[in-house]
Length: 289
Ligand code: PAF
Image (cartoon, rainbow, N blue to C red; front, side, top):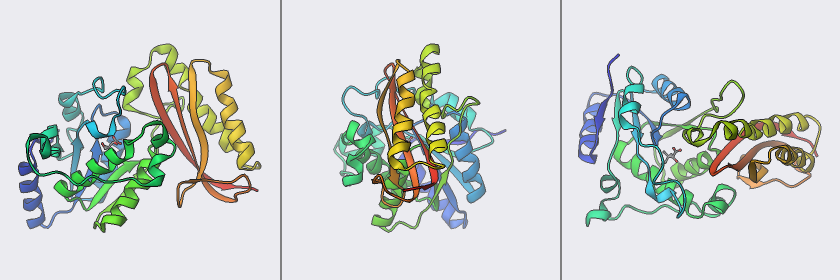
């Protein structure tokens, strides 16, 4: 299995894109921050189905981390990641921060993207500016790589919603493909941050998938109020876990639904286990008033 070719500069990536376009090849991009796991490989496999060439970007984006967050300790494992992508991806784009944000070395400023009011809720309420940083880097990656398709994981439901809005707002000719969450056998959603968890915390982290199961069960007959209550009550059994939010949103606008809402809903949950922030999500077919 051949290892993907690694591009470190915008110039290399641009030349590659031009060559592929000249050859009439379509390109799928899987944006990541590295520390790849089976969830990322599932995104790459999906990308492979959708385009001739698969590019995985690996960049730990400083703009999406707040003060006191895990930017410094975020795992940087480029060699292992490139090896894991052998036979799966064709290219890895792993730029330095100065390549992505040339203004850091006196170059032109990259346009800052704003996530708007949805960006200030849920993850954004606890991590101010996070989604502005995510959208700024995603727009920049889209501009450099010019993918025909971009593949994202559903686990980051709010990110997916905002990236979809970004694509529409900028009028980009990019198809957004969203893959369901990949889970461990016991239900924990795969995340690069799971590696921070001690054994005890790893057990406690099951609060999130257990709450989602309880929510799905209650949603078979309950309304939004009872579904929220049942989901949140699961966390009372997990003293190591601090629930940040568990809520229900309308997937069409990412607004919190009212107690008498009827229709499809997305459950979003975030909790801190020890010092590790985890998120998860599930789509519910229908809520009953
Ligand atoms: O989901 C992630 O890993 C990041 O938010 C992304 C999309 C790669 C932007 O840095």
